[in-house]
Image 1 (cartoon, rainbow, N blue to C red):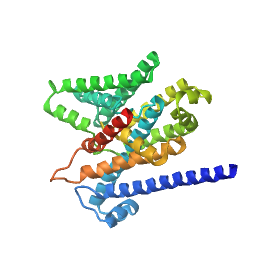
Image 2: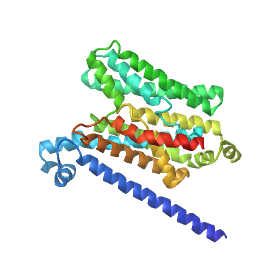
Image 3: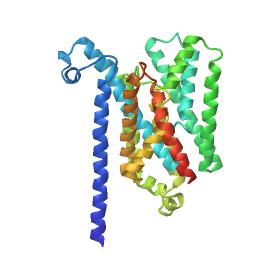
Image 4: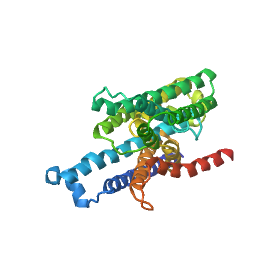
Length: 344
């Protein structure tokens, strides 16, 4: 019997590893297509020459690849992965499949922080500092909002309170954003609107490096707690029976996912539903064992945002769309499916 269980375990583990390899291959394909898609046409030879033989590429192609498309494509992968893993851990610690950075109001708080920085201006600062004031404001408000939501839940000692507090934060910051539209100049209003729609345009390799560094620190910490998180996904009482300090684990995870969410949205704006849809797909593909669920969510989130980036750059009816509109069109049907499943 023990031998049969070992064979079954190895079979299941092999299947999950193959799924991860398949997701990685799909991500590589999305990355390639994202690099190829855009207003200026590139041949495969142009792309590979610019990436691996930079001296042989023309100045125009070098700028298109290294200044525009590569930073955008990498940001799609990194931000998508960050939002996905943040969403899946929120769902795990709150035991609610509707929890995500978007539904808990973290993204709208970031949007308000960015809008506030645009309203305040800071024209006395150097151009370099001005470029980073908006992401800094977005990061601070996103992190502060998530901590406030969790503090409310901690006081009430109820997971459902965290969801309700997040919804309240979402409405609050969305309303405050709307207030700006009544008295700011048109130019500032356009900047606020563009940021709230989310965009990968303008991403830089330095911003990519910052997001990558945060993920490089936080994701291993999540993997380190994978056994505890897996036990928590089977129920709070089960986790406690296995010796897990659930309250301490929730606090630690909330801090980590708040940092990941804040840094993921502070450079690209409000991107909805990636943190909701990606965990749902990853769970269906690979299950809830966190050793495999975490990398699967990272890969699915990166794939989804890369695919949305490709679609946003592909003219439909002669126009291109903001990336947030694409993710919303993907996410809303999944949200309805989740609501119906929860009702059943």
